[in-house]
Amino acid sequence: MAERKKSSRSGSSPAPRVVVLLGSASDLPVIEKMLPLLDRFGLPYLVEIASAHRQPDKLKRIVKKTEKEGAEIFVAVAGMAAHLPGVVASLTGRPVIGVPVASGPLAGVDALLSIVQMPPGVPVATVAVGSAGARNAACLAARILALKDAKVAAAVEEYRRELARGGR
Ligand code: C2R
Image (tube, helix red, strand yellow):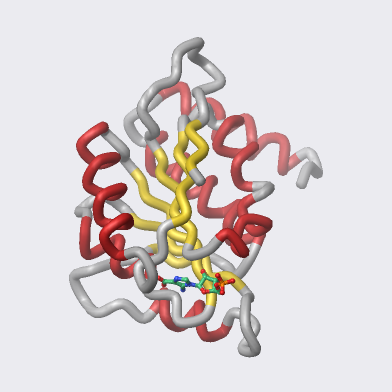
């Protein structure tokens, strides 16, 4: 499964600036509301299912290839013993945002602790469990990229104004 989205600002299919990696197809519902946000911020993205546990070679290939193509932020979404974000952070020096998923009997506490408790030197910016976290991953990616991209910064500010008007 690979979904390469065009930037809403461009007619061609640009290289992804944000790469969204999922541990399983069962995690897909969690990113449903994240993808329209990436579109809104004008960030082309790629979605791939690549488990560090089950498909380590595939995961490494995707990270290395997209990094070479210019990917700036990696978002890794996983439940249970969620090693995927940490492994991605070991494969790239680019910022990695980890989204814990509430799958399995521990309802996301397992994933949250697996993602947030990285050893020093290999950071993963950990957001909330589930869909709220996935949406915040898009917002955080945009805020990081906004530092050097005026169009993304304008889109972030417009989104913040909408929230202030009572939007959700
Ligand atoms: P299945 O539904 O495929 O059995 O997966 C997935 O993210 C998912 O939430 C159950 C859960 O296992 C997680 N998973 C990981 C990793 N690979 C799969 N945490 C990994 O590499 O970290």
